[in-house]
Image 1 (spheres, each protein chain N blue to C red):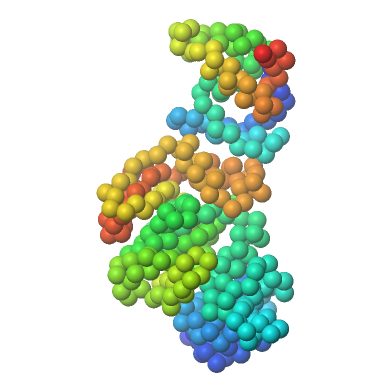
Image 2: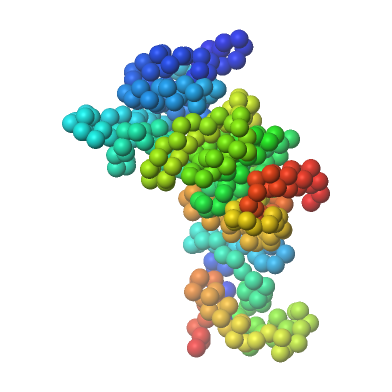
Length: 314
Length: 92
């Protein structure tokens, strides 16, 4: 077991930056992220500092637990250590991507971990969706990039909803329940300031400028979301969001057949799971109220979704 | 035209306005409208011509003959043929 401190699991922040840096540079830091154990190694001091602040509330996995993914973000062993320094993301010692500028090491690590989940976790149906929960019931936001999913999700989790995930709707095949994987939320470009204004108390990491996705900053989920990361939730609402500048709020019903298509096409592994995926998506769509959401104002959108959940009568 | 064995394996989910259908033989998911679903239904009792399928549907729905265009039916049947769900040897 990982042991406990004051009756709770040991968290990353309990280690302190020095121990954290040593562990990352040595045997690795094994973190529990929802249903996965991830062992992270890095020889970069910046990773230890960011892990201390942004991963502070995350529990360490048991010392003898098997890691689902062994990842590393480190400098190359050649001259590129010194000349326009780069870093590589490694999975099981192999580097699947082109190198990143060393100053983008943290977002590269985050993308790399997401890539590990998306390409390996085929024991679960993985929807490309943000998921939040209240009262045991989950609201899913399947969406393509650029539709405002992460921004809306960041707003909701600072407005009384629990984060299950900003990126993965992990559906357990045996019962259709959604498993939490409350990772950091990567905000891009204008969304960073939008969330900063919406909830000044939100913990947002530093901005990384000029990445492959523009400027990126990571929102740390509220501690409660992290500490309840073993509590699944039942799907209840499917919301298909789209942010449109200056658009009036619109939250309107959509047909279940359209919802089915959008959920299935926003899945990472629908084809891999074939009939199981069909069954899971059918059941989810059948039990969920399905809405299309167009919004430009976060306060309005959050209020409308609160009301939908409060007066749920379908 | 007549049903193939693959058509007998289909898994159907009916919504208000359409059907989502899983085809195990190809591992594909399709969205069928009412007309497409009715063609498969019409062929359950045995082979029929396109005209025969139309007559079956009109009779079943108690609809007007003019309300179901043969071209729409032909296009839906052609798609079912491509998917391997019907055999249609005399297809034009």
